Image (cartoon, rainbow, N blue to C red; front, side):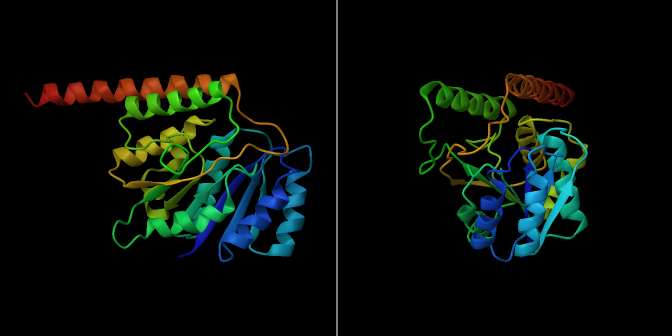
Length: 248
């Protein structure tokens, strides 16, 4: 299978080289596309230099910081335009272990239970978030349970940004028409895939906090996610009520 790893970046100069080298070691046949939002710290330039050494690394220099969702929309469009069969998305901060890439890709093609996409999950047996303070664990778990319940999604870690998709599944939900800018993008994709009858599996991952740089999570991103999830859930329930009424 032709695999592409999509990595959005902003201010990741301390991580990008390790990430690229780690992906190449773990998935030597995979290509990589880096989408850098004009990082002032030179992340894009470092990616260019390391990519030239490794080969099969494309760096797309975006003109401004437009959010995670916008970067993924562009990265997914590039992947689909270039006929990759599997698209992996992951963070650049080394919180996602590149060694899990082949595990996730293989799970897609499990001969006993093939699926359309795979989520690297912190919240199934074997998954973990070491060194997280209690309040962060509670907030993340509550947010994921709330999202899964409201959107009726059969997954434990809806907000995980470490995923592998079959290209046909991703193409079928038209990611270019999504609207989320922050981490709500993950929930929006999962909602569309579920509504489209696409199958999912979760594999356990250990999520390790970044060693370099600062987190992009903010209160505004959390508010966006909560607001959108609630609105989507209300829309789904209203559609269900209308459907039942029409069938009476």
